[in-house]
Amino acid sequence: MQTFEEIEARARQLAPAQRELLANRLLDSLQDEPANEIDAAWVDEAERRRQEMASGKVAGIPGQEVLAGIRRELGWQT
Image 1 (cartoon, rainbow, N blue to C red):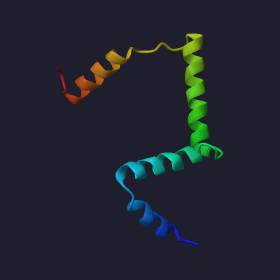
Image 2 (cartoon, helix red, strand yellow):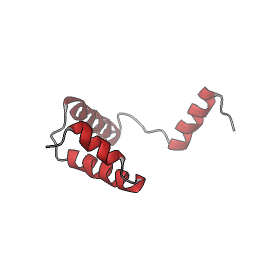
Image 3 (cartoon, one colour):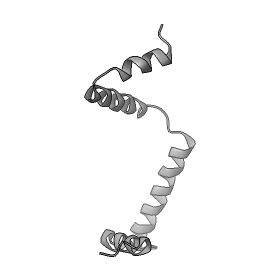
């Protein structure tokens, strides 16, 4: 049986496109794993925010307005 380090070394020898494909397949395989506490907390937070938007408790800000504000804060006026 190969060690993790041996598998990693062999994977690094692949062409960039093959490494990307392997990385994507490995990431996809994690989707089947149960969510950890942090993932679960983000799902809860996203659902809470969605409900606040749907109920009218909070209003969204248009993306262009958000980006303009960020640019002002960073001094990136265009």
